[in-house]
Image 1: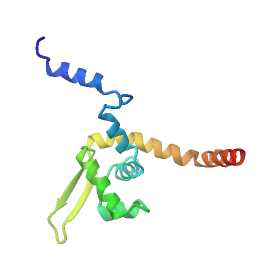
Image 2: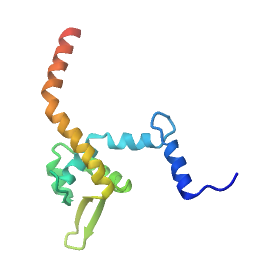
Image 3: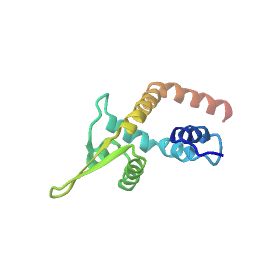
Length: 137
């Protein structure tokens, strides 16, 4: 069998990425991006249509309830996956800001839609939960 070209290798890899298969690496990515803190960080950095860089403290204030440890872990994982960049500026103390990459912006659009859907339909979901609990309780 001959060697495959780079395009053929990419096409083959794309075929092999099937999240329904237990060995597919995309499952780990889906697990990461389905985390609420990931979604909220992406939405915060993506802004309301105008992406912007934010410092750690600003993100922490925006994401009510997130612990420093969880925010740090979330930012590190997003940086590792190439969804955001971390920029340290030599000041006293050092200023660190986070900003979405092109890949992060593409995911932000999806997450923003999901966040909006959750906010828009929350009353309906709460009513359904109450009805269900009444019927089964």
